[in-house]
Image (cartoon, rainbow, N blue to C red; front, side, top):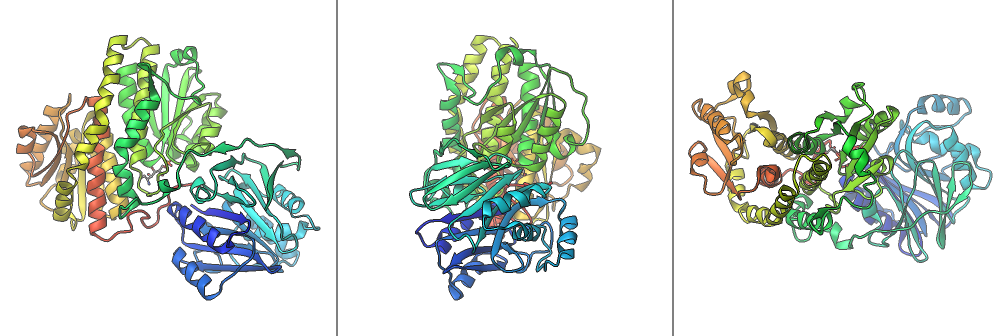
Length: 608
Ligand code: AGP
């Protein structure tokens, strides 16, 4: 979704803004722009299309100055175009605004502003903000922005500059993420940490209805009533290198290859002295967790698949009734709950609008909410009663990979923790399960070493138009995840099914043109799975199976196999997801797709 940046300081402002926008590119966008105060004049450069087009425009028409704001736009109101790109300006071209979010009452506000003779140049909701600030401006930009936002309904993070007060950037947050980066004689703002990390590691995360006024030598923070407040400064534990591709052709591939390290990091953080430590933000007491008799997991996309695996884990190991719901359904479905129901929200970005709405819905029913999140200090993390961070590091590729396996890992940790509180596993079993984890990073590394086998299979099947993914038990959601990975980055139709459902419909689709990707590793449902693959083979289907190393029986019912190390069944989704990620990656890359930024998709879906 949209990304905003701002900079005030001595560096070349357009270069700093552009480098911030490149870092936010992963969020998805269709146009971009910057505004600076250059020699006392507001100058705007914006363009439809990719950031390269804006960069070329800036080469033709350079701008200077010492402060500015920038934006990548993901169209919601008004089609993607030069005119609708941000920044948006007021009637006199003196005030510029960038905005992430949606102004729900923009239509009414626009009608009123037009009646008061304001002239609109775009069809965006954002432009009303520039005109409202223009009306309220009496020489103090902060006061004008405070008065303007009083009239806005919806969610927004905005940054505003004016040539009549050319020493400051005013930023306000309500519902959409906004962070401030604190430097020496320079300060920054952005929608997300990657955009500031090359300049500073010290950040302040704005809460809803808070304002920041950035000047070169400092930042002041205010409430919506204009009262000055102090904010906590956080140090981001990331290196600038974390944002690079590290020699890989795509972020997605780099992130797939980071999984052994991510799991190692999680093992060392989550297991201390042979006990599970869910981190300092967990905030739930053993007593209240022991009383939980029902869990509802709500999430979207890949995070929902991780939640679905969680259902298998929580019911089987902790013996707690668990439902798993897609957030956009959960938020409107009025579920039956009781005082001992725990809601778990899973989200990589921590900003997904539907998942956030699900949390608010749960809280309106007085339920306690635990979130499992990657991005530190994100809105979902802050609005939950407790958080388990998954420690995956920044994930830039739109297709979620390392966050998925880290989510499953942390759901498993929570399951074991809860199971001990509920006395559904004994101490010895717990210790055994914790020691089993040690082999997990190496198991993933072994799969990564077989990448050339997977690439070979991708070459053979890259031109197919449809794929069917099958799994059973705890690997049914893994099959769904494999299908999602393939479709989102390759644009090839793929659908996931529980293999037992084959003969209830999808078997009719099977022929030599519909490759079947099956998870057939050794498990409690292994025999059943092999029977299902026999069904496929006897109908002329082509089977690509993920099998346990050395398993000749599974190989016999498959045309192509990818071997994975033998791991306990509860851990198998973490291992089995990896070859499916690589298969999707290679098929997409071989087809020349924009792997890290697939069409129509955004990394962080901050609108409904
Ligand atoms: C993952 O590959 C997808 N791009 C998408 O389904 C994603 O998982 C979903 O939008 C949820 O995002 P979140 O984890 O940031 O909430």
